[in-house]
Image (cartoon, rainbow, N blue to C red; front, side, top):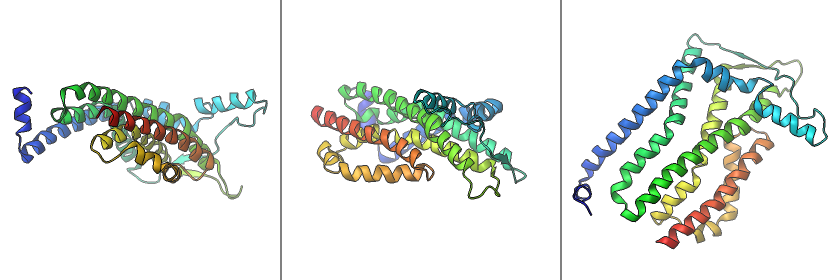
Amino acid sequence: MGEAEKNKADMSFLDHLEVLRWHLVRSSIAILVFMVLAFSFKSILFDKIILAQKNADFWTYRMLCQFSEWLGKGDLMCMDDIHFSLINITMSGQFTTHIVTSMIAGIILAFPYILFEVWRFIQPALQKSERKYARALVFSGSFLFALGILFGYYFISPLSVQFLGTYKVSELVENQITLTSFISTVTTITLACGLVFQLPLLVYFFTKLGFLTPEFMRKYRKHAVVVTLVLSAIITPPDISSQILLAIPLLILYEISIFVSKMVVKKA
């Protein structure tokens, strides 16, 4: 163990809190930088990314239409238009929405750096042989987060927008959805998908700490299926297609997590 590592090992609890504080400060600065960047490119953030799901030519809708034609169902799954309008009903509504959405974008864009800061914080507690795996975990966590964000944005969120935006109890009632409601639905689902895709990473750390074992995860696999379905129902709107679409990758991630836990125990 080097001199610097010995010094860190001898640090008091308050010293560790001071170190943690600076890691949090740097992470917050990274979020703020990306937040300002997202705030500056308003047209891209809203017109090209978030509000794009309201348009019938959005990538997901076009793929569904092509898939329907490939199945020989004609234009059954095609959407000519999504019949609802967005409105703003408060004086500061659009400005507040701009700030909150930019902050969420900042968190998403800064996530790899946040993971890097987490790795830097726990690095002194790791053995030399474990540090190369920690670096791989930063990459894996960033990759899984990006995968979850893309999955939520291109699959779960558009189906939710299409279902909730076009659903009517009667033709006499027109859908006029507030801007806050629409953006909250899109951003919440997308960010939640990115976070739940961190399951293998969480399992790795809990197994390292001794809280989880592959035997435990196999034993409670049936319970995990129930929890996954409940979690999918919470994250997604009340349409069965979105819930199933999210539940399937979560169950796959659970099986991958069992393998991860097994590898950790084996190496230990």
